[in-house]
Length: 173
Image 1: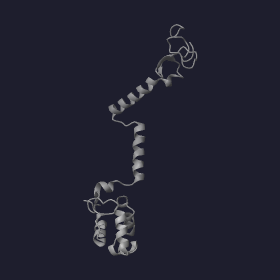
Image 2 (image 1 turned 60 degrees about the vertical axis):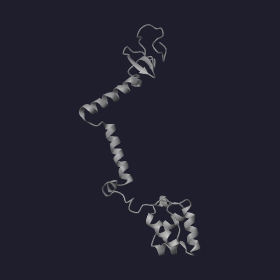
Image 3 (image 1 turned 90 degrees about the vertical axis):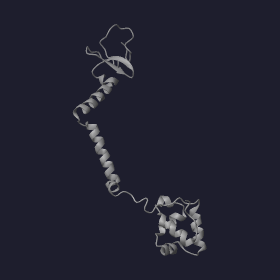
């Protein structure tokens, strides 16, 4: 039979050569390779698509029966642990929680950064002076003026101090 035959051609019966590689042997087995049912030699048997599926099913069944975790699963679990360890310790968040509600940033008006910057300049204050007067970080004030208060994690108390000192409305609630 010719190479890559589907076994349906002439040549009569089982033949004695591998339909995948053409090797002549008396020990052929049936295999499904890329959807074609072929008679293949032992060297080509690993290409059998059903063998891979059957092996995975057997491993999964063994895992369920014995309660053991396969080597691949253990490796994946270990990799996940290492990944979590590199990212940081999440136990702190589980035990202590977060303080999001403690100093929650309110919804802010559109163009709040421009409003703050204009009001600060109208008051004749430099950024550092205003930060010192309000006892807040200068970087927080800069973030507000640049319109990135949320990304910088600025608290609602800073917004409240700015509203009171500069007599502006920033909260949109």
